[in-house]
Length: 118
Length: 118
Image (cartoon, rainbow over all chains, first blue to last red; front, side, top):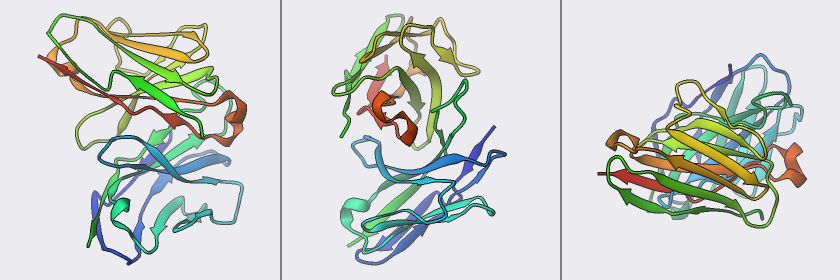
């Protein structure tokens, strides 16, 4: 079974600064998806960024980028020019590419609470 | 983008009663939906996978008779908490896979439902 570990329960960043959230995972599979989801106080889960394991290039989405290290099974999220609206819980998630029973399930880490200081 | 609507957003019920939570994909068809439970300040725990036209697949430790799942159409899955007790109080979140873009791996989440059992 896959596991996802987020070792930072809480992080804080000054507005306009950069912060990196850590995520590691454990899997025996070679192909899979990795995601970062944001859960603001409204509790609505919002997809921040997605990475396919077979792609070597790190995904970027505006101010959000990832550092995907497949060999190290590491998938960190970098938020540049942090804004007050970035304050939320951030969850790292894993999804197998295997199309058998249990496919499409997301395995979540425990989350990192990000605070943005004005 | 794909929208998932969950209803009700909040529900309070008496112990021993049953509560139904609906999860609808508004602008896409979803053969597969997922139900999660989230305790305060914790991650999302997968409860079950809901498949249209077939029985749901429950995760280990989740009581099938207490958490009834029905996925009668391609746009609607329901979770019924039967004979609810205070320990069932939690935040329940559904997510759906858009059949048109299933290969992207992305899941779309509802707004969540907060259940309080008195």
